Image 1 (cartoon, helix red, strand yellow):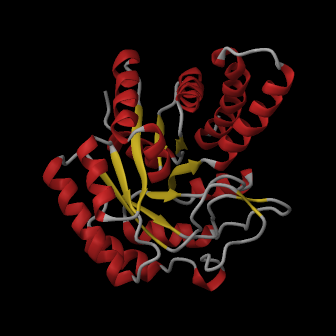
Image 2 (cartoon, helix red, strand yellow):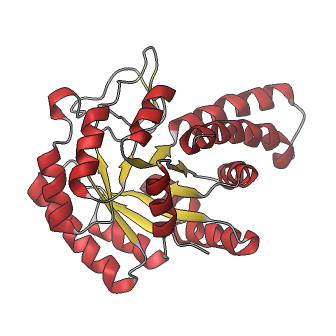
Length: 287
């Protein structure tokens, strides 16, 4: 089976994107996997520090790996947004296929320093582990937002081409995540900001490695298509899945007040998450 690096390279060559979806429970995992399997598309399962604490860091890796082996299917694990060297090391030691060191709130020199340290550690453990670094603060939580978070990298504050190239050249990361108008979460009463497509193209041309779009929930379909055409190879989705989970769970509980079997209560919830994932995977792959 192809490793994750090969899967991403194929996406780059074909100008499509691999879908990355976060989980914090087994229902989310099955919803994502079964959606991808129905479409015969590779998929990345992400888990943030909070999600890993709830699910179990090693357990995320082990369950994803067991599905990959049982079904001979290209499903991969990513430790999303490690905010410290210790968190990064734990993820690497647990066997994730990819790990993100998030130094986006640090100065670029401090970000480079911690990212280089993380790359060196990952390489010492397993050369196939992909390391992602990022520049530009895009918010810290996948939730419904009342307003744009303070300090978000928008307008003139988005990631510069110069900083992107400097960062990639000095750290030797495998994947790069910029701030290009994207944000974590979805705005409640307004649409999310438009992406700076031209900046995505400029960064991609300058750095020569795959570019990752975080904060995909709430982005317009047209922006997704343009972003992928201009260099995005992985797209992260989380808030949309959480919202589908919450709404469907409330409906299921209200409609089955006497039901106590979790698998019966959760079936429509899984179906709702599957629909979100399937729609995004179809868009990202140009179906």
